[in-house]
Length: 220
Image 1 (cartoon, rainbow, N blue to C red):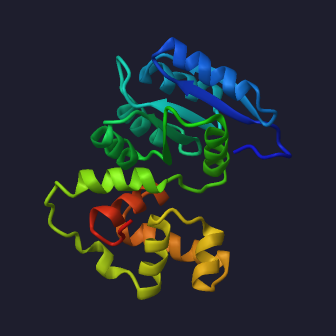
Image 2 (cartoon, rainbow, N blue to C red):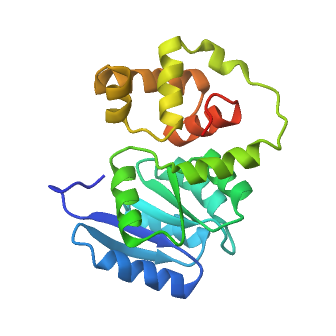
């Protein structure tokens, strides 16, 4: 992924509403360290353009024609694993949002977020962090609370310290914050996260967070 030394962060926008797509492009065009390299009107085009343009991050709407954001996310995680995926969602999309994160999305943001919140989210994801806000966590928890699923035994394999790291992660803390809270190094945090992802059989931070809230390991 790009950083300050390698040039601006390269963004692909996947949004079927032209007005929203144009607004996002204009908003990001005002940032010196971000550049929009392409725009897709549906998930199918997003997959094709991602393969062609190799962006650092895709801004992905969940509700699109031909191929929705969930299926597009699932395909992109297979063919463009180094590209971060930021889901753009509206109110009332809890179920499809959960599906998108489980498909491999790295984070999610409401469509009415400010330009500052959007840019901060982009920087967060390209650095390998997840993006989970307390308000979105509460919405997901409300959705999951109605699901009556049997507990999954995978988290029984976690050590007490790994459970602490997972709980901190699910509260939206970044690596540096987790290290500070648990009085360990960031390198140790990363080591614990690698072990957690392996034991839970999840692909990354976002899916680990969904696992944690789904199985009652964290409350907000």
